[in-house]
Image (cartoon, rainbow, N blue to C red; front, side, top):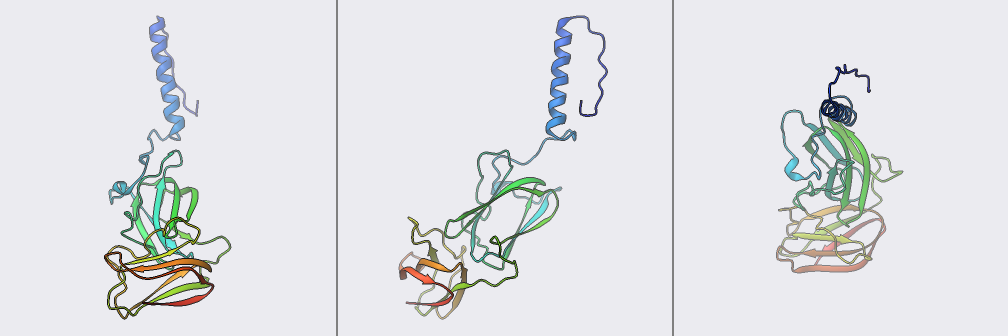
Length: 231
């Protein structure tokens, strides 16, 4: 029985026998489910931002973005959990562009990971062993983490107002996806900002802080490094 021996006393009635059998079954389940450690997993199901803390025993999970896109949302969950919790980037307040990293404190254990880029494309990885401090690199299949991206969009703000919302979306999508600028980040007048993207065609939109459109271009080809001036 999982390497454990239990002495069974002589029983005098059926009630005592049933009680002991129930206890034996419960002990077997506890030892089996918890790897004979006698301690249940503390990972909440689902797992969300409220579960991030710096409590004793936590480990650091660092996500490095070497893909040619910007990460807009991160979800972690126990493999046995059917539902994802909340976005760990706090619903658009933070972004992880190409070449950047993001660290959080989590309970040690095994996790499934879902990453959503700002075009709303999702990428899943299962059974990540995060029992110790881990640095994990997100990159596309076949792409060397040190390889430079083949395409980018450099936004040049020549308007008199700051750009507060930047959208680079799949033309076949029903929405513009997520804002590529994190909370409280702008492209001021006279400034530039470069976004790494995969070569392709995109719907591109820039808005001011009141969501007024400063420039809109649909089905724009971005086969390489492109400059996009506003207005």
